[in-house]
Length: 170
Image (cartoon, rainbow, N blue to C red):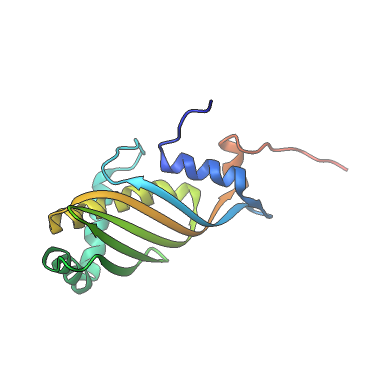
């Protein structure tokens, strides 16, 4: 029996390798859902101080929207879902913070993503959810990623052992 996969990045890579469709540049899969725990340390090689700085820059860049969201999560206990949209890098993101009793989770929609970028996405949204949940007086819970299209280039597939390079001569 195969060991249980508890790492979201490994899950996504394996899912893409098994269920993805190939094209000229690599393998892609559409409408993918992946869940990550906000308090889990997955051991990703990401500098947490850089993630913290990036979250602070994001909040500072759209301070009015974030202040409104943070205040609403703390004050309005009747509302269950708190949405926000923003641009990170070149990609638009939509995030829904969801309150469930004393817990807060979030749903993140990312239109397109390369698999090798997913580690930084998980780490970024773990920090962001913890920040928003603690401000609201809630316990951070899970992050559900909905990926419109996720791709892995052929070189990455080969390096991870999901594909073999073959030389064909005529």
